[in-house]
Image (cartoon, rainbow, N blue to C red; front, side, top):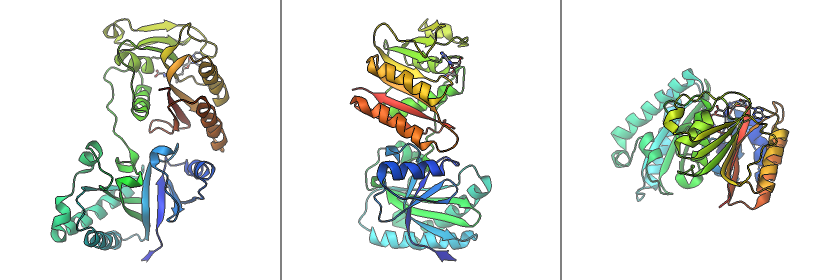
Length: 351
Ligand SMILES: C[S@@+](CC[C@H](N)C(=O)[O-])C[C@H]1O[C@@H](n2cnc3c(N)ncnc32)[C@H](O)[C@@H]1O
């Protein structure tokens, strides 16, 4: 068994390791190294960016230990030793803690992660009674009100021979959800899976359309996003040459108006509360559309999907971030949502 020194480990969707590495270098001046599947490591001395402040990171394991072993007993023993040291040091701590044990899209490694967690919890139950009293389930940890000193213990298994372990606090800026996967409720009756993507985007933005607000949905067919906007109570102009197939249209009380127009050139006659855009086209064209709307001050919120080039996506992401950062809006960001594959979603609220 061999342990190496600690690193901050940041996780992303598999295949986007280089994108996160480029982002960390370009936006945070940090030189990360791709060390495992879906993982970029930063030196422990680096100031770890909050997951929410990045486009591509989904989770972080602050001050993580790399355990190079295929034996789950060896890995569990390392974790147990660290927990024993931590609980000795933290006798006066009052915050709660939880344990996330996971792999990413890999059932075999997920099983190993859960087996390691079982061994660790057996030890905590028999030898760490006080610490056990402060344990909450991952679900309760994510859904409850958290304070900065609450502790997140994480075990990530990226391969048959590697385990990463981290114990950090909420103040380290990790996601409170296991592997960063916030579970989404799916809207019953929504006409396309992409409806969940807009729900996820609204959650990240921290605000949703309210009753009576106005919205334009560019590239609306078959109607998933329009359905979400109208379900929240907005009046939606759905722009697309293709047909909408919203089944529960009558339930939405005529709040969706279909316009067979070109989303590249459409602008509303008066500003609207929401502009969302999911047209299938190159990023440059989508950014041109967004710029026209921003220049015209035609909306107060936006959710815009940007397709990424397969090779070297970072320069395109940076161009998008530069654009949305140039208008003095209260909140703008680019996010690689859980529902995003070769794309990112730009979010903005003006006030
Ligand atoms: C991925 S689909 C949108 C899915 C939609 N957000 C949903 O949730 O159902 C992309 C849509 O963009 C539309 N589109 C592509 N170019 C367009 C343009 N120039 N103007 C309007 N719509 C366009 C296509 O017709 C297609 O329906």
